[in-house]
Figure 1: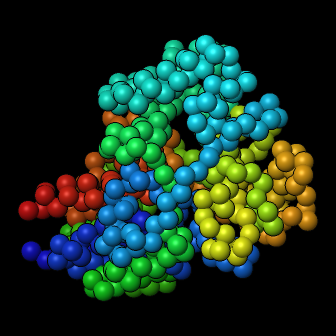
Figure 2 (figure 1 turned 180 degrees about the vertical axis):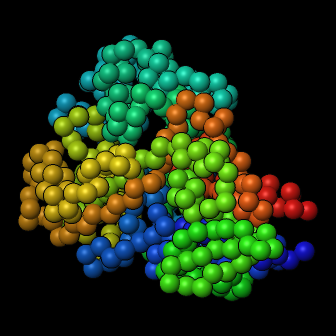
Figure 3 (figure 1 turned 45 degrees about the horizontal axis):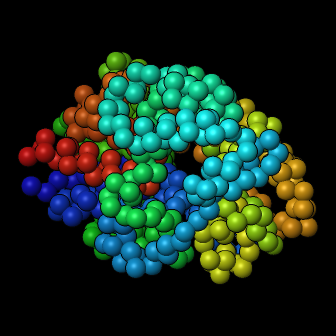
Length: 437
């Protein structure tokens, strides 16, 4: 039976839900507070070209993403590239792109390297995520890698990604990261390649938007949801800033958990408390356009604690420069608590700190090499995977009739990325629809 659905939040999750619901024959309206769809996958103008606001990559093993791309006639436009990985430690840049380079890696002795390799191998074979959720990530890594390797390699990387929050993060965090690395090998692929669509996520979002429109989905941007309440007939009613209220048979809210708790007014106190328990990490990400590439590495992991950003993502080591105005593009991300004071700093302050550190890392790099730098911010990106995380997840179905809350916090068996976002949207939507049949 056809029903009238409202989707609050026009990121990848909201767009996926709208797409699948329309395929099931339902009437769907998709609301987004921003002026365009895409959320964390949105693009913006960087210098004189359009590219992703935050960095993204497609893996051969990202079957859910590739499935969507096939449906919107973009799978043939994926460009597959073999990339290299760098490691910056003790003021030196090393290549870590193959086994031979790993064995040569000076900061660790041979025994430390063996234990590091063993840690990664063990994590790739483990299947019991829930057991890992009961173990602090630092305890698990010390057990398998040893204190020296933990302090030299793992601890700086954990702090770069999680800050001091790593102390309450479970071992499932590192497990999901390594599982993604090994996904291609488990599916029989000989080599993991990184990919991108010509035109980046701007092209993906535009094509998916066209697909939704063709399917009859009503798209309403610049619609910030202020509250969702049960109407007189118990059907959920959404109220928006500067727009009329609308009533639906069902509403799926894809906003971050704490925001969803505030918007859904008729939730029980217990539900609101459960939703507000989640701690979110945000990101500040600098997009820097340069005349020339600074390294051959797509990813440069950084363990030196004086560097203010998490790593260096050189997009031009993956993407053909013809899509980037003929220039080099790097991202400098810094992950931090959603209430960190750095979010209040001006763009100029962040640019100054980031660029001074970049020049210290690469002495040949100078101000004259910079063509553009822009600062993007997102306060709620990753729900911190704390101990016993999955046991604390509230039900997607709420006590409000016809209201469901589904967001990236429900990703438990993978890292936060576009493929896992599509995956959880499709799996959970199937569960929702089965309860209605």
